[in-house]
Amino acid sequence: MLAMSACNSNGRTSITHTTPNIDTLLPKELAGNFSNQQEIKLDSTAIARFIKEHSHFIEFQKELYQFYRNRNYSMAWFDSTGMIEQANILYNRIIKMKEDGMNLDIPFYSDYVEIMESPESIERVEAELMQTSQYLHFAKKLLSGISEDESKALEWYIPRKKADYIKILQKILEGDTSSVNNQMFQQYDLLKLQLGKYHQIEKNGGWDTIHSSKKNLKYGDSGTAVVEIKKRLIKGGEFTSTDTSNLFNLELEYAVKKFQQSHGLKADGVVSRLTIFEMNISVKDRIEQIILNMERCRWLPRITNSSYLMVNIPQFRLYVYNEDSLAFSCKAVVGKETNRTAIFKGDMKYIVFSPYWNVPNNIMKKEVLPAIKKKSNYLSDNHMEWSGNIIRQLPGPWNALGGVKFVFPNGYDIYLHDTPSKMLFNESTRTFSHGCIRISEPKKLAMFLLSNQGQWTEEAIDSAMISRIEKFVPLKKPVPVYVVYLTAFVDSDGVLNFSKDVYSRDLQLKKMILN
Image (cartoon, rainbow, N blue to C red; front, side, top):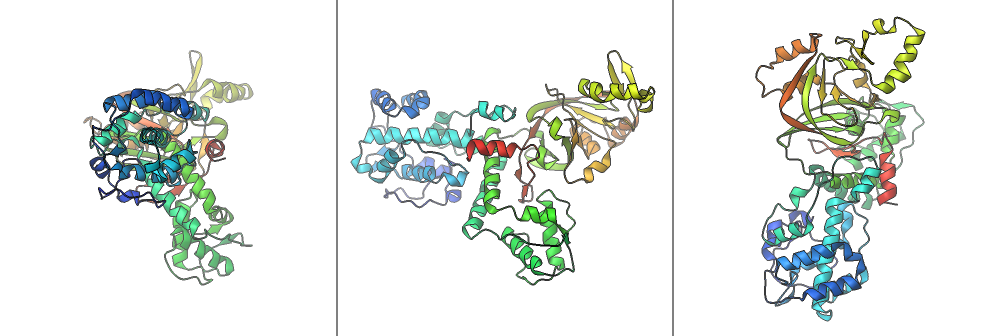
């Protein structure tokens, strides 16, 4: 990131094409070394002339004028000795955008390279405005990614964060070390670190394809495929032994389980054809998957609420956070391909114990009414009744919502809820619902959400969930709920998890930013 780049020296050096170790370059160093000079200025008419000659930057015209007005038209990238070192560092970051997962065209690339390679031969005002414009272009793409209209076309309805790029740059100049870091969703930096690791694996030759004629390989088996599996898992980091014999030993079984766990597979240590399929996905494809999800992270705000929930659809998992720390997570069931769970943000406002299930119109028309025509006692057999113009299911162990539902009002009629169909949580792919989200630990979630409402003890919650009497409980404070779609996600143990693209959304995004 921008605050990312700094240098421990105040000296002026010639530009090189080597990229600094940006993870060790501190924002305070960038701010501290930045030029605060007031003597070298530019004329406001120079901005108009620059924009006219470089029309690609016209979208930043307002920001350019604002930035230099705030500085009383003093130059930012030059002082009395010439171009400052931070200009070179930013240049290196821009031309090395691959580290941020961006395959981004640099506007006026040849002009920019000429300015940075031979600053002494270039008109100073031109170089100054080019650098600021390149910063604005880079910052917008880095912090925001594709436009909100484009992300909505991908059915991503979480409101996009707003970034004031001039304000961010100005705060860096003033020594604010958090102005950029606080813009990014927490997963972004974690994925960026993993991207670097996978680029290194690619540089080292990636991994070879595994060939096996057996349906399953397990502990005690032997053969050349076992050797290939060991070498593959050594490259991925799951198998830490140096043993490359052809025997499927306990160490390999443990490594296979780790791989399966982080790839959304049943972690039984048996190398099935599905496990081999996942192992054979190329490092290039995994790099692209990380890049796609870094892009999605640019669309999300940095969440700093005291408590919030996040459902990751392709991972089939609910995450419960308290003050940015993971309180717990649990399995989830999401919508079928034909009833996709929407990607959006809501605010949970109340809990309903022993709820009625009001059958949605589409389910009533497509499923319940035809069933009633075939079987006259269908409603009573399924503990249902008419309530006005709708059909609802009575509270009880048979109820489709189980003992509790968690409501965050939204236009998609989606909520979290318990379920009597517990066996579905044992499946590795959990796309079974009509769009709502079933969770495996509803009581635990209720206890977390009501922990500050003293009367709701564990015993009281147990009783309310089986009472068969519907009870609404408002929360003292709304809790944000983010329903997201991340097929690459770093868990609380620092392990990179890959998930199946269950709604083919990676494919859509890839066409937009990588093809």
